[in-house]
Each structure stands twice: as C-alpha cells, then as structure tokens.
Image (cartoon, rainbow, N blue to C red):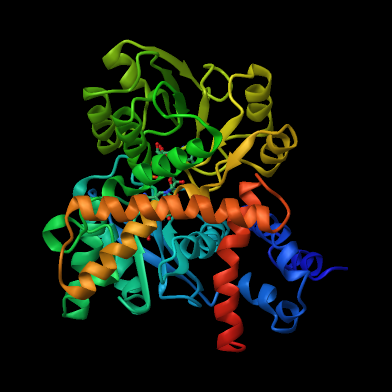
Amino acid sequence: MSYVDRIIAATEAKNADQPEFLQTVREVLNSLRPIVDKDEKYEKAGILERIVEPEKTVMFRVPWVDDQGKVQVNRGYRVQFSSSIGPYKGGLRFHPSVNISVVKFLGFEQIFKNSLTGLPIGGGKGGSDFDPKGKSDGEMMRFCQSFMTELYRYIGPDTDCPAGDIGVGAREIGYLYGQYKRIKGCYEAGALSGKGLAYGGSLGRNEATGFGAVYFTEEYFRKIGRKIEGTTFAISGFGNVSWGVCRKINELGGKVVTLSGPDGYIYDPDGVTGEKVDYMVEMRASCRDMVKDYADKFHVEYHPGEKPWGRVGADIYMPCATQNDIHREDAQRILDEGSSRILIEVANMPTTQEAMDLLMENGVDVLPSKAVNAGGVAVSSLEMSQNAEHLSWTKEEVDQRLHQIMKNIFHNIDDAASEYGCPGNYVAGANLAGFQKVADAMLAQGIC
Ligand code: NDP
Ligand code: 2IT
C-alpha cells in the first residue's frame, strides 16, 4: 500500500462520521502523489499523518438568553489545523449545519488556500450551530459575547485570527471584537479580521472574496482566450460573496443571470445590475433568507425548490453559497445542456466528489475554491499587516495587491499542474502548489 493510500485509510477509519472532512482529505492527498511518492522524506517525517490531524480542537458550550428570557445553548468550535507557516487564520461560520466535520473540512482546506496566497498565515476554522435566521440584534449580540467569552482564550494577533464566513458579517465581527477587547483589556486589533473601518478594518475586505474570484477568472480567461465582457454567469447564493462577484462582473461587462437561496433560484436575463445588486444586501440583512423576494420586487422568473445548474444556458456556472451545492445530477444537467464547459467554484467545496469526477472525466475545466476564493483571506491578512503597523492603506492599494495575489495564484496552480504531469488539472495544481510551502516548513521545524 502506498504512503498516500495508507494515510487515507487511517484517516477514514479514525473519522468515519465526518464525510465532509474525508472528502477533502481524499481529494488533497490523492493530488499529492506526484510529490510524496517521489521522495521518501515526506513519509519519514510523517508529513501526511501530521497534516490531517489538527494541532488543537476546541469545542465549547455557548449559553445565551433569548428575547423571551429563555436560556438557549449552542455548540461552539475552533479547529486550529496548522501553524507551520503562520498563525492560524480562517473564518467563523454560524449556521445550523455546522458540526465538527464541516469545521474540519473548512480548516483543512484553509491550510492550502492560505499557503497559496503567498502570505504568512496558517490554517484554522470555527463557528457554531447557532442559526442567525430570525434573531434580533440583541440576541445576536448576546450570542456573540458568550461565544467570545470562551474563544478569547485561544486567539490573538500572533496565535489565531478568526474572521467572517457564512452567517458572520460586519455586525457579528463588531460584537465579537467588542467582547474580546473588554475581556483582554487592551486593543489587539489583529485578533480578528473583517472589522469595521472605524476600528481597524481594511478597505476592500467586504468585496475581497468576490472581487478576487473575478480577478482569478480574468487571469484564467486570458489563458484560454476569453473575456468577462459579454459572458453570462449563473451563480448561487445571495450573500456577501455573491454580492462582490456580481459587482465586479458587472464592472467588467459580464452578466449575472441567476441568484439562489435555500428556497429556490431566480432567473434574471437582463442581469443582476444596479439597484438589484444593492437589494441583495437588503435581502441578506433581512434574515428572511428567501431569494423569492428578488423575484417579487423585480418581476423575474422564480423557480422554487430548484437550483440553476444546467437550466439557464449560462456560459459559466459559479457556485457562491455553500458546500454540496452541485450534486451528480446537477453536473449531468450541465453536461447535457452543453452551454458551459467551465465550473468556477467560489463557495468552499460546493461540488460533491461524484459531481466533480463526472465533470472532470468529461473534460470540464474545474477551477477549485481553495484557489478562487483565496482573495478573502488574503485581504484579511493584509488587514493584520495594517493593524500590526498601525496604518491604513488606500482602497486602490489593497485592490492592487489583491489583483496581483489572484494573478499569482492562477499561474502558480497552472504551473504546478504542468510541472507534476497533469496540465490543466487545476484541482490537483492547487493542492500541489499549496502543499509545497507547508511541507517545507514542517520538514524544517522537526516533529511537532
Ligand atoms: P453569507 O452568509 O453571506 O451567504 C451564504 C449563502 O449561502 C446564503 O444565501 C445562505 O443561505 C446560503 N447557505 C448557507 N448554508 C446553506 C445550506 N446549508 N444550504 C443552502 N444554502 C445555504 O456567506 P458568504 O457569502 O460569506 O459565504 C459564501 C461562501 O463563500 C461560503 O462557502 C464561504 O465559506 C465562502 N467564503 C467566504 C469568504 C468570506 O470572506 N466571506 C471567503 C472565502 C470563502 P441560508 O443562510 O439561508 O442557508
Ligand atoms: O473561507 C474563507 O477563506 C473565509 N471565510 C475567510 C477567512 C478569513 O480569515 O478571512
């Protein structure tokens, strides 16, 4: 049995109840064969058995009192996966689907994503099964304060810097930071990123993930001789990331024709433009979580209970909502429809393994999320740098750096895929390119 097969089997045996985590471990480790099978130093140093085991995992009770005076209890998590190349860095997700498998898959992905940015950040992730839907402002604040009352022990500018993710935006980061500052009794801005501009946030962080994804797409388009201008995109979600994607695609002359929510999808052939983009922010803030509101307001088609994949003849499909959004039957529909040969993943792990295999076997280019969405964490890291130096860069400066980082990521993963004998396999390229620096650091730092 090869080293990779042995570690995959051992990880499966140890984490049988964690399907999302196992999916990403299988994908990453299978991609790494050309590196780890070529040189026994990786096996000798136990690189793979160490990289699949988080350095530290905390799971804690989050008690809070709702508006009716009733005590509620949620479960909080922080998985500190790897600090080989920098302090742990990664978002916090508040969503009822959060469990240890989801947090570990996101944390594991974050190791390689953060390495791809070229910045000194390790990998981590956290969150809670708390459901923000329908909660009042006061409930949200009390929940965040209780969450931080435990989390503060494990984070800090040189230890672990959490940020936002699904269900955690500017408001939640504000409440979390306020409580952190109060407990610590000092102003450590670098302990959280995604902060408001009034208290240490970076210009450009809100739109960074979406803009970065489009900059990445532009660079990939340059390679294949296409342009954003005149291209139609079908995207899912209507959250923070979808909003940034829409804005940048519009700016570059492309068109976004779908959005989706847990209730279904809307089809807007004229494009999600102008005030319709602003309305996405309103829909998100309303906590109703229904994309139908868009169809009612702008009189466009609404398809309840369906997803846009393979239904609207788009040039590019671009999932921006959550994991396991594209299943095998969705992938089959995209292939049967035939309008698109490109899937650009923006959400973390939006494609199931079966769907991914089907698309790639049929020659569809899949651009993987850990490369495409790395702009968010990259600008988070730029925020940490600004905090450490007590200064603020202009929006243009941040945007310019983001643009360059996304270009570099595309070329690094493209080159890695070619160098290791799988040209055009961007999924493998991202894993190979992300792994190399982390593995070098682990080798240099000894067994720890
Ligand atoms: P938001 O909370 O702003 O939006 C997430 C969207 O996905 C919402 O429409 C939400 O609806 C939907 N969604 C979440 N979970 C589920 C589910 N289980 N089933 C169906 N729909 C779901 O989050 P973001 O826009 O920030 O994040 C979107 C994606 O991008 C995520 O995969 C995130 O990990 C990734 N990402 C985010 C970054 C950031 O900086 N924010 C950086 C890099 C990646 P509902 O809540 O009703 O389910
Ligand atoms: O998935 C992600 O990369 C994020 N949610 C952003 C993490 C961060 O630290 O900005």
